Length: 268
Image (cartoon, rainbow, N blue to C red):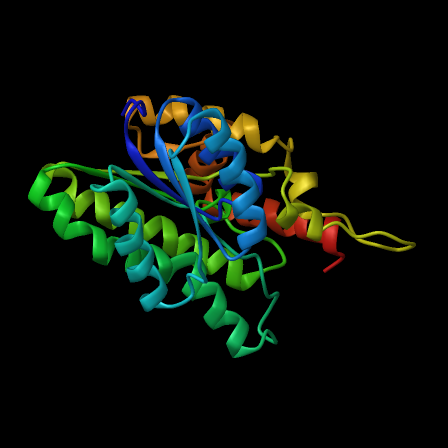
């Protein structure tokens, strides 16, 4: 898909990957609805982009942890855009650790990382099927293809996000619905920085140990280029494909390697 003159929605757009993607979409000539919980940050991004191209962006503050909020986001986006050509479900949370994680935290992880995708599509799909086209893009993370050391809720929900995107492509791909899933490793975002530990005896951030940390703008450029080809997997870190291949063909060896990495960074 070429983004010029397309109507797009990007969630998690106040900062990080979402902000960079929204800016890149806009640069390509798209109209953009920015969605996030942080109204102040959203307004700043919208003001900057509208200064370049008036009335091309609006900011909608919302908490996407409920079906009602997702339904309202789709409805209010349509009021501004008309038909939504592309919906980018980028909002996500990195919360929780192990089996001691409270149920409320598990629920939040599922609501934002998985159910918000499902709820958005629930209110997009009828228009898309009637028109014979529409593009759903989600951010799952390399953790959706592999695993996230140190966080069961993140690993499990990102796997589920990838599975939902795959199901969507299988179910509606022959009816004009395009689907892509972004699966990066380390990206220089607030979520990554929150995992950094400092002080004597502190353990390493497992994402930094695992590979290169990219800037959000680099990821956004890769996203735009991949969307042109309408490829399902968007892999800013190409080595992730190699890891997935090893996991599929040498699963026991891959698990042993992950245990070694866990011991290295978390002393478990």
